[in-house]
Image (cartoon, rainbow, N blue to C red):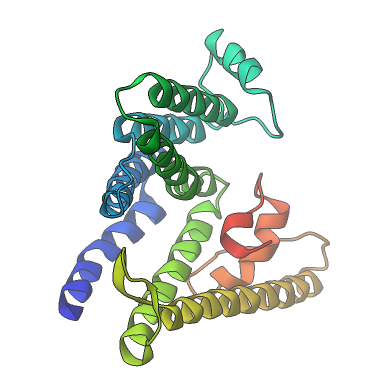
Length: 262
């Protein structure tokens, strides 16, 4: 099993790195859409193992609408009432995130109330569908505006991906070596609490190290250049953590609250 994971990583990681660093945002959006659909269907398969059958087609459609909205870059900041956001987008322009979520809720309500599934199955189906959209499609869609966030966007996205890769790898080996307490034996029998804690600790530690390096490097850069607000130029793999905090606060149009814990 380990050699299969290593072989898969050896093939896919160079492709993912090349796509992030040298691919266009439109090409990245297509890749994100494909990965999102695959992740959603795998998540729904896990739900069916415990008797929760999701509304696959409708959830996948709304997930693609979310990704399209992120690619267009017209997601409105702040909350807008769903009917108002939908009416604005029907008059022209791509759908906003509010409109996409409102369409999803409206469609789920119609499917739950007017399909042949009994209510005892419809409510769990609505729950697994909503959790898939919120926990999988919505976070993954933010890879698109992150990639498009200026010259440092691809480096920031790659840094977030490296954090996930390192955390998952550490969780796998720690859970395999010292894992005793199962996390969710009905869904994934081999995942353990020990591996999950290790992943969280590594991601938190890397984030703290990146914050410290970012503050130190930014302060040193300002002392050398003598200009307040000057940026670190030429982000490399070694300096991604150093530039993460300052770049997201100064140049990025949104906060990476779901990635770096702010």
